[in-house]
Image 1 (tube, rainbow, N blue to C red):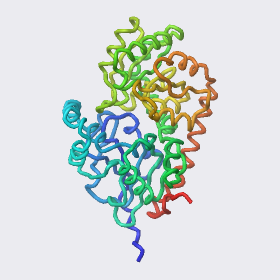
Image 2: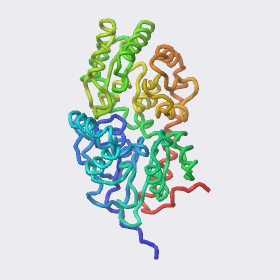
Image 3: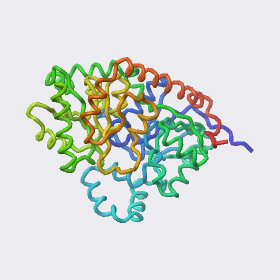
Image 4: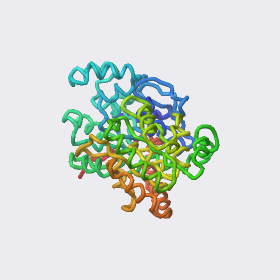
Amino acid sequence: METPNPPVSAPPVLFGAFDRHNFGDLLFPHLLTALLPGQPFSFAGLIECDLQAFGGHRVNALGAARPARLIHAGGELLTCTAWQAAVMLLDPDAAAGAIARYDSDPAAAAAWAARQLGTPRLAPYVAGREVLTPGGTLIFNAVGGVDWRHLPLAHREAVKTTLGQADWVSVRDHLTQAALRAEGLDFPLCPDPAVMVADRFGETIAAHQRQGAVQAMREAFPHGYLAVQFSADFGDDATLDALTRELSGVAAETGLGLVFYRAGAAPWHDDAKLYAQLQQRLPPGAACLFGSLHLWDICALIAASRGAVGSSLHGRIVALAHGLPRVSLIPPQQGVRPVKTAAFAETWEPDAVPRSVTVEALERAMMQALAVPAGVLRDNAAHLRERYLHSQAQWTGLLISGSGRPAGLAQ
């Protein structure tokens, strides 16, 4: 007997890693809400928290109630492990303690993470039909998983099972698409929702450019600045020396200032102390530290810049959405493992735009990026807006009907 569709009067749940301070994850709930006007949502992560002070949302813990409709709002959800998720949801001191205790013992780390998160899911941000009411609607919107081939088999099998049961899945880069296709799952490509940020939040971003922390940076560098960000992975002395050399060269050649901002304050994200160290190595007056962690201040800082440099994917995408030059940095210990910034750029950006480079190649890549014609950058942004809206239109009807087709085993 076929299970009847559940009532759809309760708001759909947007689910993702917006229960921690990370730039892109804080953006997703705003974007989906703006892209589906008139549709109320509730917001869920793995823990209950309130990030409204940073421009985020009040977030509930998934599992408090069984929703009828669940939308994975985006992000690199497929490959995030329980250990990674649990640590990133702690405050810095608690995270350091957990890492010291469990990092060398994967089995103990996994057990601790399951207790900490209250779920046995190996990929905790990949929620399946077990959390829904019977017959509910399950959607994955522009999710990523570039590190798929390096995951344990059990993790991959769990994610495959969940994706195969979904009503709709789209993925945001060609590496994720190819890896899943090799596993028998064939899903369409969709750009990250953040390509819509300038279109849907242009007025909000412009208002933040004219006030507070962003206005102070514009006054400090009246001839313009580059928005610069890098994660804690770049903190060794050799890498800081290379950043000093390369950024000094860009500043000297362009006359632009350097503004260092944090794209995430959660553990394993950005470290303000490293920015202070780099500022001391640079010529006096070359750089400023941007202290705000507010979502719209960060968007406004990037939008008001002459270009963006960093390891953050969403720092890159916000620059893309505003038609700005951008260069992504490869972490120094990355080795042969894929980088999500490169995967996104390879999938969606023109060859003229630099993708991901090592720190040693930063000056050359930034000068190349600044030379790309503005029309090329604007056309790319417009094309990705069209692609995103086309993809979203294919699943929005499921929110009304409460039913859909299986997401797609490869034929």
